[in-house]
Image (cartoon, rainbow, N blue to C red; front, side, top):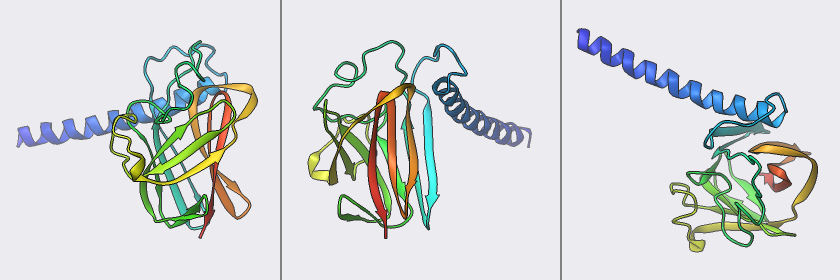
Length: 191
């Protein structure tokens, strides 16, 4: 009985700690991005989640959020014209609760990988079936569902930690990706 109690307590405690670390990562990154924490000293890339329900569609994005930390990001840490996991550690995943349209193509509800190919004047945003991989190590273009070309937008303010947001756009929506001084938006339509 005592062993069972200790085992159950340990499992519950581990679960609470894991949830707390997830929340801590989100709160820390938000505080750095808002300037509430003057210097980003966190090592690593905390796991973050962006989610929103627009209409009857729930969008859930899981990613790791690296920091700028004085590094050259575009054309440096993130190479131009190469597939990027658009985060750190595992591939960024995006989950749609209903069918949507991206780039004129119907995307069935479900979970996918979101990759990008950053360029100086144009980015390619990719929705791919293989979301269970480290970075883009197992990326295969034959598993792409859709590719969409978008223009990066320079921002006046810096976003210190990579940040995803789900944004409404009229009756439709978009996924906004911001890091350092750039922003890109992947538009999609509700069905």
